[in-house]
Length: 169
Image (cartoon, rainbow, N blue to C red):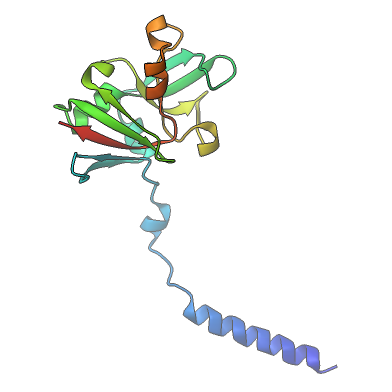
């Protein structure tokens, strides 16, 4: 009969001891900080800029309605034109190495982007994209606009789960 209260006291004491070793709470700012979605690096690997979703949404917004080889039906992508992002961090870039979360990488030369396309999409159908949905960032072209956007080269450059850009000067 007395074993249960004694066990409860031991468990309570263990909980107090364990709590005393717990890590201190992080400051509210750190807990509420938005995750970094994109890191931009120079050729040597030095960080030039880091962008959260809010940072990317602060740029001019572009939308592309298109079908893709990787989704069903018409898709509505929202993001920032790659040109605008590059102009903000490395206006003299001659090329970009794009790398995804899974380390898939491809290079886009300077003539591979213009003022409108591709976009760095951060929303599809108005919703942020999970990793499972090829997000949180995806390089998207208007594939339906022209056969020029339906080539193997363009498809290889359509990096989803993008998390790093390395600027080549």
